[in-house]
Image 1 (cartoon, rainbow, N blue to C red):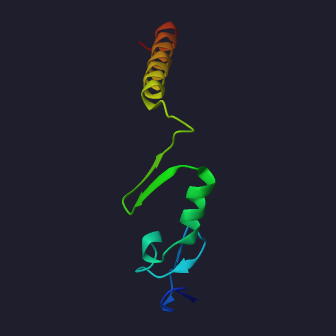
Image 2: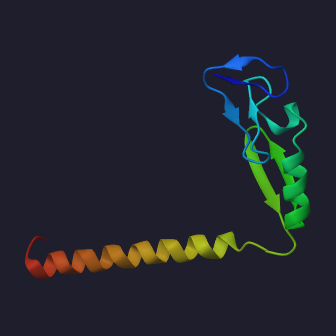
Image 3: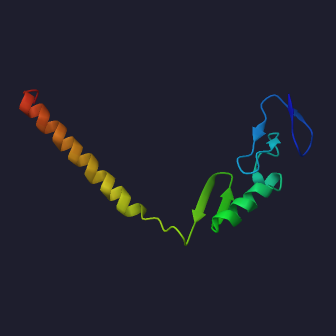
Length: 96
């Protein structure tokens, strides 16, 4: 059995922090509950503002602006093009 690095509680299913690689119990599994040093190191390394909340992880960066809207539009057109090609092939083969 592994023990929590904060309270020493033995856990059958411990949690490993993805930022500091420490092992913690259910109560201390979140970075803000065990004063995670790895999270601050990641922030400094990336030079970005990371807002960590248990329900979501949001990265705001001036170095790497994201163009999500353009990517989504491209993916929709790509899917439509594939569907048109599939329908054309099915029509040629006589399935439609």
